[in-house]
Image (cartoon, rainbow, N blue to C red; front, side, top):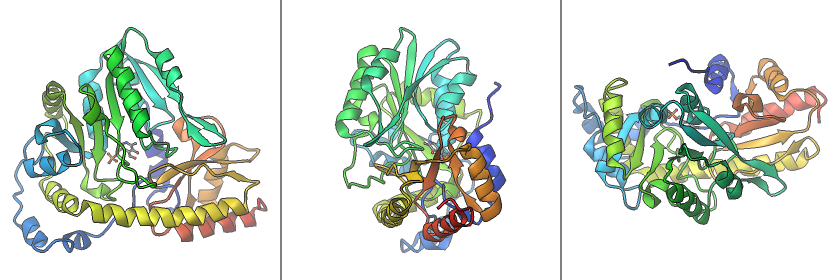
Length: 373
Ligand SMILES: Cc1ncc(COP(=O)(O)O)c(C=O)c1O
């Protein structure tokens, strides 16, 4: 399979481990191994006793059981673990799709949700989020109009990367009923679930529709990206067994210590989510002041949920040039819209890190130095 470069990863590779002011990251604040183990008496011993042989292909049963409890009607047999969410996307798309299938993908979105399908020879239509006065919005009539007789899959991401747009309960139900009416599979990337800033949890696609799959991960809301543990939850057990067979050609099984550490983290999941939500809320308050102060230069598209937002800057040069100069001169990393193949001068800002305030200050200093504010 030939596949286009993953633009975001290529961009991050240049700067993620060298730029001192990371103002665009999508994963929440992480922690040291010792901090995770300190959450639970006996956790250290549990880790030390973990067996370093191969693990079950579908994933550690205790971990799958904890993951299934994150849903309303999902059992541990409906969950398959993967090495991060990325491997899970690759597995699902490879198992489901064939050349000539039509796929509808929300847009802008995390690239692999449409790029794997494209690489497999599928035709991909964009279901576009639009930036309006009230923030980002999406139109279900447009979705219906995109459906064709050979539409196999609708791929969505809620809370969305990069906009922070999030389906409400009614919208998720509407989406599932449209997919069901046409017999179309639904892949719902929900990796930022758990970071609902209004306190309202939303239903997961996998709970509402038998041909839906919900994607989850330890990386984002829990901030444990180094564990590389992700999963797909679906009532479609035929899909699970096909994905298991495809996984035989990828990682085969997950890292045993990572599975144990994920079990420990999920045992304290609510606490970790609360901590990360407080960081995001504090940072959003700082950003609100910043954008209000410089409202002629920026349009603040506050996220509904999650740790990222896609804001707009009023500049008369390409946003990618601005971001490139910003990171080279000041060490502040932002993601320009072209990384999402999206037009306009949007950029992604990340709110999940404790260093946000320091990075925002450095950003402001750069704008002052350049005479932009
Ligand atoms: C929407 C979305 N899905 C999937 C992934 C992949 O997650 P992971 O890096 O844990 O594999 C990401 C990572 O940024 C993402 O933003």
